[in-house]
Image (cartoon, rainbow, N blue to C red; front, side, top):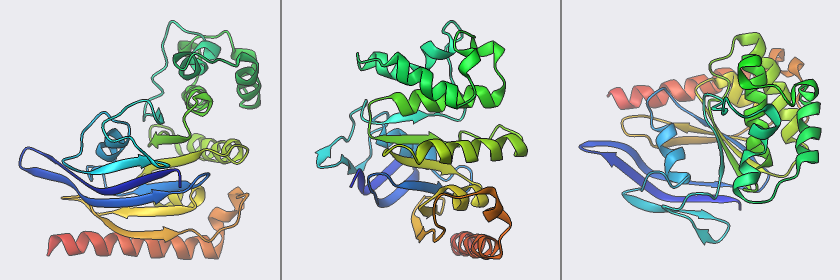
Length: 249
């Protein structure tokens, strides 16, 4: 396995945010964390990344305990967070620079494939929102860590750009062996991208269900309009609504 969470609990003051979160993400697996806004998804990412300490529980990468330790995952936040004084290529290489092992030629290859070959020396203010997200993802992809945590990276994009980014993400990820843990509150996005969907409740966040997505890869845009996809979207929606209704009782 690539990543394993064991009975993670976390509170802030008197408010319990995470309760008994246990989960395994296998090598090369794409797992989405699906839950309502404010359900503790980003808090869980911060614990995985070593920025927050769990009150109880541990995080393992392979057989190594990485609880409270940073530097073991690559992370892409909701905003691209590019350094304005660095070029596209320099921003993409940042994770490798921190690891003191850069491969500029491979970075150029990925950026070119992402449609940024003519923008290698451009600065972030010269890029569109979708371009910035591509640079941020390639930065995460080039980092030496085995697992990427992506925190709603497409939430600020319009619907058409978001779909383009989802398709590009799948095409790029399918060529590598890294695991992805992906936060979203969009059911359609989770189904289109994932091998497995983890549904969270809130107040506090618990794992209500883990769904294994049945669609074969590679996935194409046509899948989104298929009867099977719409049936699964309805089923996941119902499971989320059931979990929320249980909390209101």
